[in-house]
Image 1 (cartoon, rainbow, N blue to C red):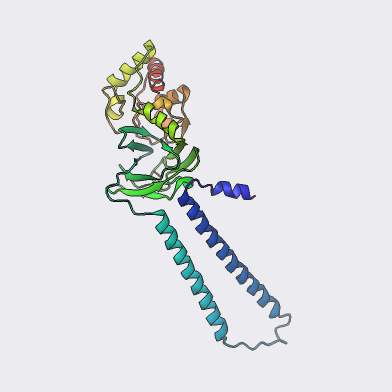
Image 2 (image 1 turned 30 degrees about the vertical axis):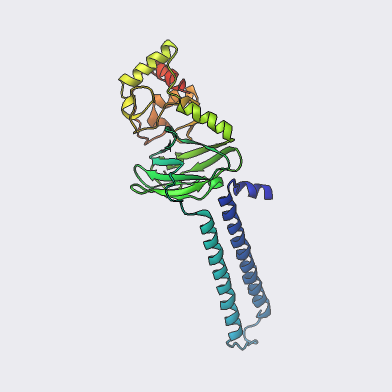
Length: 313
Ligand code: CUA
């Protein structure tokens, strides 16, 4: 049982450890108060049990002792919670050192995440790759409505508000995959605004970063070349960017390394030629409400586009 509880509150950062500890204190204190209230209730029920109302009579009187005890106990409890909570907040939301630029900028869109590594010139979407151990400063923004960043294992949650920059610290102590999701209702596909965070050992992270810095893969086969042409000639390049090609628009996700991602559409689909093709064939069927129109591609065009896009590793 304890392992499964531990899984729910899995933490991989010093900050979540602090929050977990605070939650533990609150739970213990809450349980203690609950036990006292329950105990007193049963005590009173037993002591003043009346079987025949006409025969029994109890004298009631005011008790200052009980009043002071209750007020005193409640005050001590509330004040200690306040002190503990302020201590935890100070530990988690440490001030940003002067002149410190964010390591990562994450922008919420309906319904996907844009991920920027400003000092590296890398843009990605829907999957966040980070190095372990380092405490990263993340700037959160929104392009449309209010979203909310939350990856429970890696730190606190924070609203993403249009026209305002919010900051959080993020840290993963262990390498691995961490799930998160948008935590503010933001429209039809709010439920499919998931985020996958992949934490790497430093050298693996650098390798990933080096791959992301490369320009888009050049189409090799005739089918891929045809797909590239459709991408440029049809409307795809009006919304999406592919580094190293003429496509530079920033309305939809950057697709430069689309084929290297594990998931598509904010976690809705596992990445693969089949799911990519399904999406291109009928976006509104796969993710209703998404801002990707149906372009009525022919089967041949679908095959070519899928081959081109999936090759972008
Ligand atoms: Cu974005 Cu809910």
